[in-house]
Structures are given as C-alpha cells and as structure tokens.
Image (cartoon, helix red, strand yellow):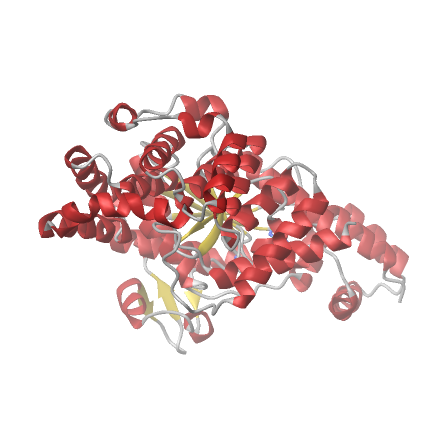
Length: 503
Ligand SMILES: C[S@@+](CC[C@H](N)C(=O)[O-])C[C@H]1O[C@@H](n2cnc3c(N)ncnc32)[C@H](O)[C@@H]1O
C-alpha cells in the first residue's frame, strides 16, 4: 500500500506525521474506510478524501489518539487555579477570564478546569471564567457534549469530585452535572487550519497538552506560534511536562513557577514601562540607595572584585552586611517579622509579604535579604522596574550580593535586554563560578543572541555543576530564589542536544 500521498495530504491538512510506529495506524484507518466505501482503488479513495470533508473527518477520527482522563497532570491544573488565575484576576483582566483547551478530546480536560473553578468560586465561576474546548475530532466533541464517562476517565480523579459533580447512570457510567456541562463551550476546530474560530481568540490561558506529539516539527512550531499569537499578553500557555522543552523556541518565555514550567506571553516594552508602580515602593527603595556606582560600570566591578580577590578579602566583605544586621536580627520580633514575610511568599500572599518587607526596610534600610525577597516577589508579579530597584538597593548594601546580580540578569533576560543580561550574569559567575542558574541564563541569553558556541559551553557548565551536586540537596545559596536542579539539568541536556544537532 503506497501511503505517501495520504501522508502528504494529512500533513498538509491536519499536521499529522506518521513515523514508523504510527504507519500501521494509518494503514488500518485507510483499510477500514476503503472497505466501508467498497472502493478498491487507493487513488479513488485519495480523491474522495480531498473532496469530501465528512470522509476526511471519518478518517481523522480513526487516526487521532484521544487518550485523556480527568485531572491529568494535576500539578499543572493546581498551578493554574491557585496561581495563574488569581494573578490574572489581580491584574484586573476584564471578566470573564478566557481559558481554552486546545485538543480537548472527549472533554475531560476542560471539565476538570470547570470543576476546580466551581469548587473554588461557586456559582460565580460561570461569570468569572469562560471555558472553551476545541478538537479536530468531531466524534470526540460529540462525546464531550454528552458528558457521559466510564471508569477509564476517572483514574486520576478524587472521589470528592466524582460525588460532587457526577450523576451515576446504569452500566457504571456517570454523567457530568449540568452546572459543569453548561460552563464549557465545545467546538470542532483544526489547530492546523486558518483562521481559528472566534471561540479560540484572545484567551488568557491555553492548555495545549498531549496534542503536538503527533505533529511534524514544522507543524508543531507553526501551531505553537499561532496559539502564542492569539494568546492575550500576560497570558499563559501550558503544554504537558514531557512536551515543554520542544516548544522553547523563543516564541514565548518559559517561566518556572512552583517548580513547574509554563509559557508566558510577556508584555511589550511599552506595556512594561507603563505598568503601575506598587504604592510608591520604587521611590522608597530609591531613597534608601546610598550609591549606584556599582551598576554604572560593569568592568569596574570585575576589576574591583579582582582586587578584592587578590587581597583575599572578598569573603570578609560579604560578611560585612550580615554583621551590620546582626544586632537587629537579635531583635526577635524583627527576625520573626521577616520569617513571616517568607512564609507569606511561600503561601502566595505576596501583598502581605510586601507590606511587612516595606516596614522592615523602613526600620532597617541595610536589610539586604528584605530587598532580595522584595525583588523576587516583583519578578514573580512581572513588576520588573520595582524588581530592579530592589536589587540595586541590595547591591548598595552589599556590593557583591550574588542573588541581586543573578536577579538583575534574569530580569534583563526576561525583558529582552540581552546585552545587559549578559553582563549581569557574567558578573554573577565572576562572584561565584559555581552559580549554575547564572550559567543557565547566560546560555539562554547567548542562544537568543544566536551565539551557539557560547550557549553550548554555558549549558554544559550549568549541567556539570548541577551533576556534581546532590539533586535533592536543599540549596539556600541563592536566597530567595529557589531552583529545581533536576528540571534545569533536563532542560540543559535537551538544549545541548538541540544545539549540537543544529551545528
Ligand atoms: C491525547 S489527546 C489530549 C487530550 C487532552 N488535551 C489531554 O491532555 O488529556 C489529543 C487530542 O488532540 C486532538 N488533535 C490532534 N490534532 C489536532 C488538530 N490538528 N487540531 C485540533 N485537535 C487536534 C486529537 O483529536 C485528540 O483528541
């Protein structure tokens, strides 16, 4: 059976690729459809396919992999409900916040989101959020609309949600309750065809999980670009954790939140500059800066660190700021307040944390860790101007403060200022050559600048340093930044593979 004309047709229309192990699926599908039409010529069936959309749909149904279940990759869903959505709501997005499940199959994914949102926001969730599920497979969409499931779909689901949101039917089947069913709008749509239907336009969050694996790499790139284009600025695109790295192609920013990687559409430079300053904190921080000499001349830092290294007093100098604080830290209430701020940050109560940190800084303007924690919060909330001010304030107290340099490098990287990112990260590495996150972000920046050679060597350095450490070891050396060494090492390996291939 000559599959080539069908492969070409299916690649052009749906983006499907049929490598060795999937060829048999294509052969079976064609055999089944040809028998149904009682046609005995492949050419005639090919012609029918090109002319008859219903026939194309019937074949596609046999070729798609609809495997899905409720609450698949629950950590990603939790992140979305607990962090991403509250952040979007806080930023004053006009309601409803729009969520699209691209390649939703039989509906388990968008219904899982609807259940989680209803559980958290009750009836109000219908007004606050719009949820859309699209899929190329019309049979899968019909099934999603019916909302009837068997035990196979519940294998990742808590009985709490089964009892709360499903009605038992005969034959061990369950129907999703109307309050959830009516919240999700389903539509047949081909992600590889233009234009996308309006239901998919301008979402704040797109889940595009376990769909791209069957696409040719060019199609993966073009669909990812189109989804990124339609995504609202500040919005998130979530792919499954196994697919994350394939999509890190410089279209959206890969951000790490709670040890999970998601893609974010960063605001443009103008939008960033116009972002509202947080209660004048920037001015307050500016006032507390005693000197800004450090960031004016990166070469001078290198020189001065060199001199200090020669004189072997770098370590002593680093301890100075800590000493300054010692007496304050002995003040138990002061220390307790800082620990409370750290706890607030861990529990995503950033507003409360910022309030405490501002008070602490007012009492003790040389409290470096308070500036660092503020900077980390501001990076998280995309308030990059404030984050930079806080880093500079930390540096004015401790001119070799490694996390401040590292954060400045990351901020510059995230805001597309590659030259600056490069300088800040090199300075970080100069202070501590084992700072693997700096090597990693340096590699990312070099990659963005098209400097493959430098990117390769920096990814390799990051990987070498990580591999020398115990992955499970808790590392506080970059306080307040927490990096998941295991995920970063996987990312480095993947990047190295891609870069070596493209050489
Ligand atoms: C494995 S399921 C994933 C379902 C769900 N996203 C999940 O992660 O559980 C993949 C789905 O992608 C759909 N799909 C494949 N190609 C598509 C395309 N070009 N446009 C829209 N959906 C597509 C398939 O029909 C299938 O239902």
